[in-house]
Image (tube, rainbow, N blue to C red; front, side, top):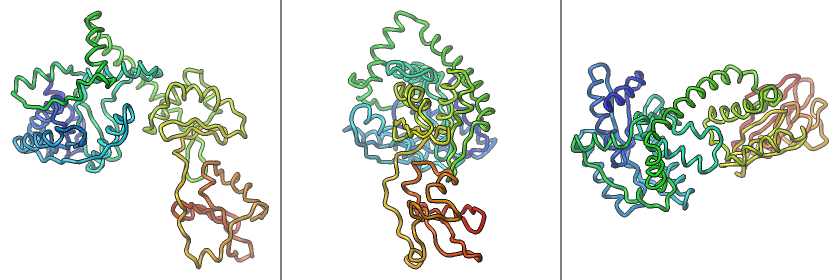
Length: 408
């Protein structure tokens, strides 16, 4: 029963008092809003629940204002507070769809607090469309993972209660309860890959194999069970694989990684990226990890770039690094700056050159452009003090004074 899905959603988060519904005004989110209202009322005898809706106004369609007004009217009728967030999107094709998705999540993250729950109406048909899209893009072995039922957001958590509910069941419920919803004309545009899969590919496949959705559901369920098992094993192994460097960055030890079988190495790397909540590299980029990054000489500096991120090597470990820093450094206080100098190439502090200090402090190459190694002042015994400054914020990170290293 569809109603039970929402009751389970509320029961899954007993410590949460605020639930948001991502409400577009379409069929799926309309059913979600209606059922969430009923489930919240049922739960009200056990705890206080505040239900709100968020509508993201993309400003793309000529009907966008009308959709927002429809959402306002429905929320007023149901006595549910509504937030309408306007966003602007740039891009084209796949990049436009990605930009729209990122804008939506940015809008959601503005309002959620740490224990809040965002409910979204993705259903089983969406799940299989996603899997087929990844398959067509020659995705890796994680393609069967599909859309996750839940995941952490910047604040709060996202939960999808309809992932094993067919769209036809949602439509049946909406008709039976005389619900009103809007139709987005872009959902029929065959220039969009997902729409071609929805309107052309899936119907033909289902005609050839009537049990297609049952088979796909079993595959997804089996994959998730194996993935959960792998995740538990990798979590147990992970502490032994961590390599820490300067400034708190943690990488994956290649020495330990090489002890695993080839497929397990790949699975572990995918799990690590998912655990960091990062986008998975393309299949081509993933292959470059094994062909270029891992076999590279220890003094080489290979990098694999994708989605604004880079996989880098240092200290026989793999690190995920954000796009290179290009900002201006913060100006230092003039009185302080006059008493400090930047450590030269051959100058030494406590018997070590700047390069040697970088190695001793395990400062990886990608951090060095925005870290200034400077010296100044003197200790009681006359030794100079070495300081490492983060030029992005002007903050002192490490100080070498007397015979020890202090972290600030």
